[in-house]
Image 1 (tube, helix red, strand yellow):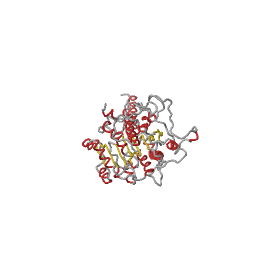
Image 2: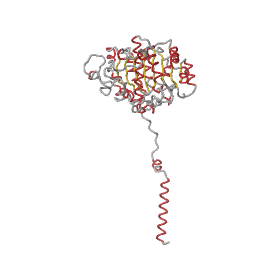
Image 3: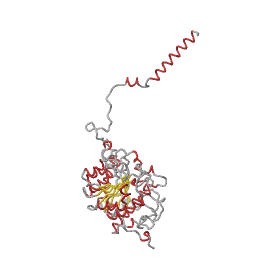
Image 4: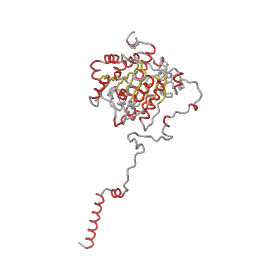
Length: 424
């Protein structure tokens, strides 16, 4: 080998060795070692005096999301519900979308002047990753393609319940009350606003009808009801395939399984007046059932309901509520089998069917005094193109609204139209 080739071989070998050494070293380790050693800067939301309690800036942007527009900017008008549709009769693709194409109300004065019985409002929340899409649920329910919607809700071809052939809006004064404000960075502050809106409606004697949102919603709505009707004066009927019990998930108060526990522990709700229907998913420990029994509550599992029958189970529920007439209903759409309600982030392959449950929802609302209602956990992002779950949500609402209308009209809760029963 020539001297020139020998030297070149040595140089190439040295370069390769050097490159290998560089490749094996961490690319920025020398920069890290040379960096100044300082104490980490704290996150700006942390209060050194109370590091477990997040703080907000408190500047002029803090409450912009719930600062209502100045009513002086609106056209002068007489208080009362406002019908914003152009035509008396119109199919669903036509018009400005409201819940059931109802008139809108913008203030407590509108509710009072209109002698409103039911005020439906959106409570857009999404507390957990699988529930994030639920913030869009109120908008989707308003825009849902469905039978009904032929102009004025009181029109005979509009919203007719299928067994009674009754249009609840012919008896009830009902409105769309818009949506509660949402702080996209704080579930806690959003629930405060939901509580305020609920209280604002309930103070007039109207029934707040909340369309959620995830199942943290009752942390706000039920408190708003208690603000008006008093502590331990209202029963709690919970429809769900999940038990939704337990507090302190990741150290936070408000989540989709805390509302009943917190309300009982705070003395807002008598544990004996808690009834849970439809449980068919694994619970986080047998001790949760023990806690409910200790409080005096009642849980009806799918196993029991299948064994004993839906009617027989509701007979037990009426017995559970025999000492209290005022009831708040919290309805999680995942109480239905996922084949009926795919549009929820927490669906289960076990659950109820609409045919089995619907008549009893209507009868319950016609028997007891509903003072508040929420339907939650509808997630449009999981629904199919036919809006299957959105349509189911509206039908659930219609069953309760029909029952409330029947109670107002003094009708027999078990009434079925003769034509539907099969009489000629």
